[in-house]
Amino acid sequence: MEDAYVITGGKKLAGEIHLSGAKNIALKVIIAALMFESEVILHNIPRIQDIHELIHLLELLGVKVEFDGSTVKIDPKNITSNTVDLLHASKIRVSFLLFAPLLHTFGTAIIPNPGGCRLGARSIDRVIDGLKSLGVKVDYDSETGYYNAEMKGDPTGGYRFDKPSHTGTELMIMMSVFGKQTIKLENVAQEPEIDDLIAMLNEGGAKIRREELDIIIDGVERLVQVRPFEISSDRVEAITYAVAGIASGGDVTISTISERYIKSFNDVLEKTGAGVDNLGNGKWRYYAKSLRCVDIETGPFPGFLTDWQPLYAVLMTQAEGYAIIHERIFENRFSYVEELMKLGATIRYVEKNILDPSEHYHFTYDPVKVYAQTIEVSGHQDLHGGVLTVSDLRAGATLAIAALIADNTSYIKGVSHIDRGYENFVEKVRMLGGDIREI
Image (cartoon, rainbow, N blue to C red; front, side, top):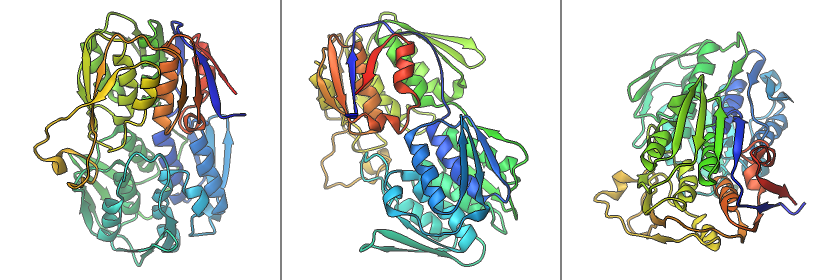
């Protein structure tokens, strides 16, 4: 295998796609399962590379894991190590969440800097500050690349996020579950994936509730699963196939996903004039109509998801006018731009005047550094084939969709990135009539 796709575009994609479970839920609930006293059964887990990497990492810690179909069974009682393997942790960012189960089990944890897609600095200072606020001692060894953490006694205190952090919120929730007193987390992330994690923990006996922008945790002594937990569908996968249908001039139906997960994208789509029908019971139809460009900026939930903006850029190449796309979450989210231009897209970087960048952006803003956070996409572009290189997961799916709507044949290299987050991507595209094969 050459880790590449050959795609012949120009076909209208049509049909129905059944969505897989959400990557950004599955990874977190698998780690949370290590905090239970009982076996944990999880349904609707996608068979993607990040899940396989995490399971292998857990097995290195002594955890027994079975993955059958879309069901994962986890027996955490045989966990034998508090040290996370450097090589495997470097492949997935959520390895950092292992602080919670390892500290609760051993009182100490040794975990390397997290991996995953490099979308910018993604400072973990807020996460470290949060751990320290609960009484955890954390030191970083620059020579080994490991964080050494120690927790004496039960977690106490609370924490206020300067800026909401998705992964940080999830770690602090798991760290607080076994506190002996009420712990309050303030200015937390609102992403719906976090609510799945809360529901899974609460079904096991945790006492976690949201109060506006805060989360309140009343400590419990143990967690025991009483029934299997099924995670929600992936909202990024949903929009990937929605864009494929609309941009190709086709007609795609997806199921099953709650309106809450995709409302901000649907709201923008309706402004563009695209066809969006709610068919009920979590089923949605997306189809081609005359499109006009609409400006967007990314933001934390309920805003426009940063993972959607590369896909939206492809859609805007097929619309009338010019679209401004402004990225607020990550400082390196436009790696796909140069690749899209190889297919004939007309995209340029533009300046956007921000009065208070440190407050406006959700990454750690450096006033000395020069950032490129805004692009202008020209519409009505006739895309053509090309040879493209994938740099991260969402850029990979974006380039594949672009190749599917382009004329002639494209070659996309580095598609193993796509396997990290999309289950059966090639098969699902073929179900819609796309001409794609892996080589």
